[in-house]
Length: 499
Image (cartoon, rainbow, N blue to C red):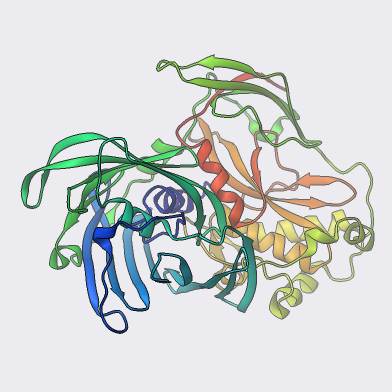
């Protein structure tokens, strides 16, 4: 229901680019000390590093990075593995990246492979003509994708590597970044904020304190004068530490209590909500926002925001909101709905609504139904009844259809694919939902469907019309998930009225 596994992976991939070999991209000026000039190929190895990944002090994985240079430029490879057990379900995730850079440091091409259990998704891309052109391959085959970006775009773990040479207090770099796993562009900032003596595997060493920030997420890394990352930490209890190859490859399965993840994502309001499903309208205020802008539509409206200074004197915003439960006013046909929003019928690498298997199942569910709302309810109910509710994530709708299990994102991707395959416009929404059992709001995903007007549904909870505790913060595919990072661990909620 909560999407906690995806949330944790998102936090790690966003905040710890090298730890998960995650693809954050930025402009870089190569430090002269990092350059090498072998005669051919990539013959000189500049670095080979191993790190343990920790969650709340317990080892849950490792990462590896190798940098080679030569006449052709640079060849950089990375790999990371996560292994943990959550509610008796073993989560095995791995991330592999490879990048080729020109001699001046410009990114030429890259590949990024991510796996979860038996599922795989591979992204191969080139930087050309002001765009990042990719082929995304997973269950159901490959699909082209394009993201506009600057010609000098690069990968953040590469940027961080070169930034870590010739460090001095006050050194800074700000640049646009690209996250491969999310296929999204953002800004990346690196700054040397001071010095500190820290304990390392070699003893106690002098290090520079390097702080990286992206989309509101900060990571602190301790780097020696020769560019070695020795340790670091970020949000949600995630940290990493330098180690040896032999130690990194020792990977015991760690049992992670569900409460450990909920602790970092649960937002407890000032008062409980007794019966969320029965509500028709919810008025609340969201505090701690870095910006007063929140998505608005017919279902949820913003009031006038106020500016607040936190304990550190930093300005934040509090935004009042009213969310209503909306049921379709009048039914329209599937054909009419499709003509109204053809853009919400287009397949994506994660939602393959044009796949033959998806189309066949969609027809089996709805039969000859032509009423868009009745057909949408049939699909919503089918997904709710036929998918096992478990904290297992999936890359695509086809993966979910084959496994018949998953968390909220899995339910949502499959529901949207089936709706679109049936000709009903649908899209993915993400944000918060109130959990009565946990006494607070958790991060969640659900579909929205157009049946004469946009209606929020929830196949994970079995709600044909989503209750008003569903607060939409993002909208769209995987590229929109980065937007959640401005909220995680930062916001508060007060309930003004529930009726």
